[in-house]
Amino acid sequence: MPASLCVYIGEALARYGFGEGHPFGPDRMDAFWRRAVAQGLDARVRLCEPVMATVDDLLRFHTADYVERVRRQSLTGVGYLDQGDTPAFTGVFEAACTVVGTVLDAVQRIVAGDTARAFVPIAGLHHARRDGAAGFCVFNDCGVAIETLRAVHGIRRVAYVDIDAHHGDGVFYAFEDDPDLIFADLHEDGRFLYPGTGAAAETGRGPAAGTKLNLPLPPDAGDDAFLAAWERAEAHIEAGKPEFILFQCGADSLVGDPITHLRYTEAAHRHAAERLRALADRHCDGRLLALGGGGYNRDNLARAWTAVVAALA
Image (cartoon, rainbow, N blue to C red; front, side, top):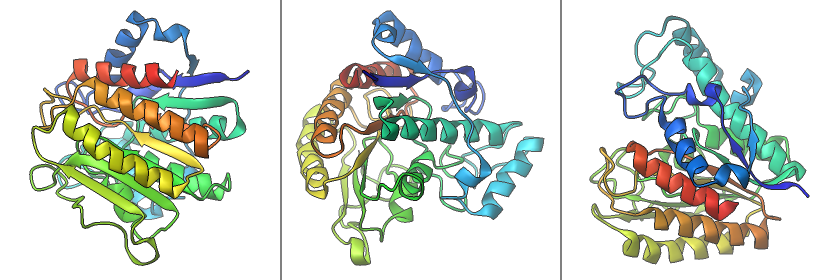
């Protein structure tokens, strides 16, 4: 029997971070894993090693010019990769490639039946565009995973579900006119939080009209508001009958995050993970990949991600 859940842990994955003192620092993975071990979750999962993506992997989603730009700035570690949120650092290219490659390794294992589900804590970099970085996100592992599921594994109908406080704009706009990408995103209202997108009226364009569901919540929304919105998200995913589910479970939606204003507890993340596991079992032969996403209060991300892992294991 394959392990029910692979969790990816390793120094190479933790290296994706922007230095001590930055909200997205390199200590985030260890904060999660210490709590997971304390709860005995390490005995319930299979540990897997990070893997580095190739340039060809990146080019399924990103433009060649942008990939080359990141490679060049990685050599010097100077400047920003966007307008001021995402600094370059020496080795950023390799660190970002490791996030993508680890996610693709998880995709491969799940599709091959080597594991039923997987969790990658440092992943879910949902702001990066095809041609640029944004919001602490260098390469969009979510987008590369979607393109790889199609090009390599022949899986077209993918559900992307995002409960990070920030709207998953890099995924939404890359696939806005794609009818086979089922999109459901619960986030803090963009009138109050970066990136300012994800209005309820944004439901997809052209042949994809109606395949995208954005559920903006007001600042201070807690678990009750999340659960009410989740019912709509779950019905949307169910109706889409996906073949694979990607779950971006950012922890910056928990109360006490330093840069957001939602007030969930980890119960919201546990509920979403449990329900998506059931949806995956009904529609996707169990195929579900969870990505850690944001979260800048270390205790919060540890609690949220261990809740997801416990639910999926």
